[in-house]
Image (cartoon, rainbow, N blue to C red; front, top):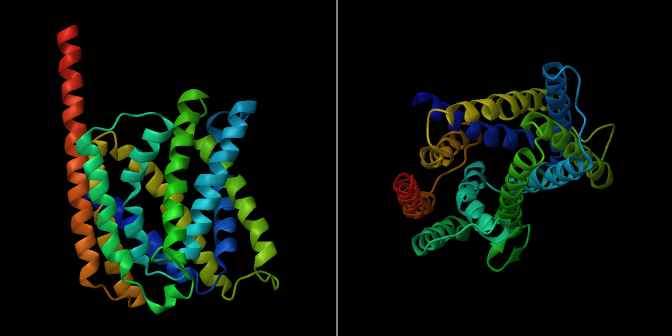
Length: 308
């Protein structure tokens, strides 16, 4: 059990470290350099494990590029740009909507069926985001506003949508094309990282690189690769063998709490009551959604036993 909360504490530390790194490196370069290095490492590992075979079919290559564009490039570029203006815990909290957005996109793209109670859980979850989004700092308001949301908030919400879309693409790639997850992620990270570096070279000042402190950039990049790309990726997969996705989703709501604690300690970020109000509402929505999912699975299991 304690490994689950270590996992989410590590996930939280990614937001904290990335927030600090943005003071010394431009966001697009930070994304590109990290993802290119991580992609090369993952492909190297896959090549050793599979005796050098990393070939992709034409269909798999197209899906991998889409995965890299949405799940790596857009997700991380939008997230880091928004994180530059938002607190680390607010950015992390917006990511707590991933289960709801995943269900919504699965309904739209994969034609998954949603019951009335699941729709109710989705609605409550989205409403729970409003209190913390409505409480905006002057710094984030400099990014402009649209429909009452700051530009930074919209960017992070869009990052979450792209992330969830990316996971749907990965699921289709792994199950439909028989492409190993390590290979798919390795190529997508490399491709997404290249796109971010190209964008960095266009919009960021290279003199010679868009970095003001090379030591902190290197330390942050190594930390993010080891913790996010290697440890969290493998630990999450391992824990899913012991715990249900439902439990992992509930436990994942501890991530904003860890991020708020780390943000307060390392960045002096102040937490207000609206953070906890939003967290409580989102938790309630998640509770309704997953209790209905468990109920549906139990009914399906009983039906299968009766039919057999």
